[in-house]
Length: 105
Image 1 (cartoon, rainbow, N blue to C red):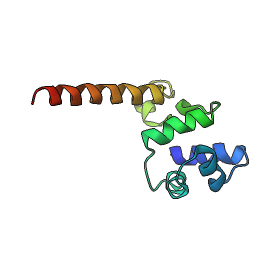
Image 2 (image 1 turned 90 degrees about the vertical axis):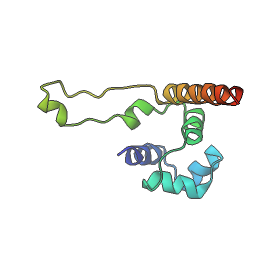
Image 3 (image 1 turned 180 degrees about the vertical axis):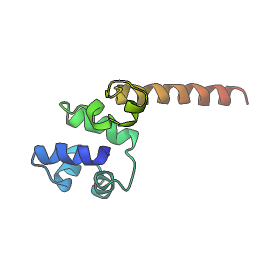
Image 4 (image 1 turned 135 degrees about the vertical axis):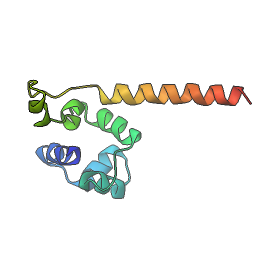
């Protein structure tokens, strides 16, 4: 799961949850929830993560390798995408929809 990969990333840097919260200027309780898998990551968290830790590979964190690909006789590869770019695109679309709805009133 992605939160486990993120935990490993921070451990490899020698960082504890409190230190991560301080670096990211983020609520320590939410950092704990994110890293324990009890809350899904927010868009703000992902943005700050890439800003404060530019060496992190979000494609690796969010990649899913599955044995189900063997059923399709496809090579066992992960399908990568740029998470931050995808979030930004969704936010742009939502903003456009909101604007259109406000203008139609």
